[in-house]
Amino acid sequence: MVRRLVAGGYEVQVVDRSHAVLEQLAADGATPVASIAAVATGADAVILCVYSDEQVRDVALAEGLLDSMEPGSVLVIHTTGSPRTAQELATYGTRSGVSVVDATISGGPDQIAVGQITVFAGGDRGAVDRVRPIVGQYAEPLLYVGDTGAGQAIKLLNNALFAANIALVMETVRLAVRLGLTEQEALQSLRHGSSDSQALGMIAASGSTALFADTVREFLNKDVEVVRRVVSGLGVDLGALQGVLDSPAGISILGTPVK
Image (cartoon, rainbow, N blue to C red; front, side, top):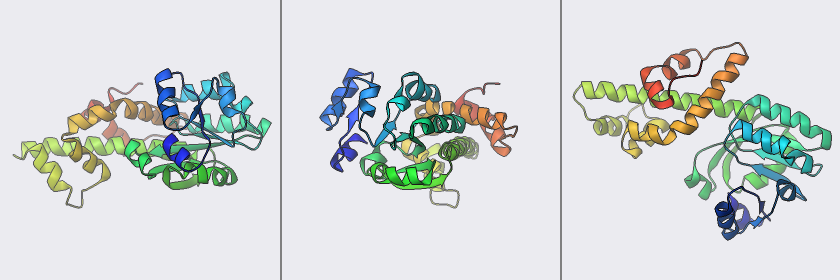
């Protein structure tokens, strides 16, 4: 992201707890600063990339990011978390004229490097339009999906469906082996049928369902647990998705669900 922003002519200030990360970001053309307040000073937009919803709250509220941002600026949250967190931060930001856009991403470093990561953006449409040229340096498409929290909702649904797709592929491979096929024969052949999907393609490219599950387990487990909490709080259920995610294949990917 930093390399794409710098190449696009933007001045990028960065802060991170890791000295090694800051050194790499400096090599990419960014300017390391000493504090969260410093990174927000004079910035038209601040892009927040941390691991969890709790860390988003800590940085935005406890460590004073929103309080340090300029009136008229926009906080762009790339971390996947609860729609409610994005909504609460947006409400807090209105006190000082700061907008909050929850701009969740789907894809990985390879897509970012060529400017083709998918972004689901929720928030005030005017705020999304203001940051579109910035985020657009590394994102295409950047999809406006609705009010604050909608970006988080779409990403959570995306990840729940993705996890279910992986579980279904695992079950299909299990059946294929019982029918006398090898895993690779099944994966490569199904890629050319109406059953093909992005999940199937990624699994086939990795070599096996087990290997692929190992690479995505940590992040998928975190995000699917957020989905479970959000829908439970709304008094609804996951329907057929619930059965797939709680199946033996689903548990092998995500672990036992927290009740």
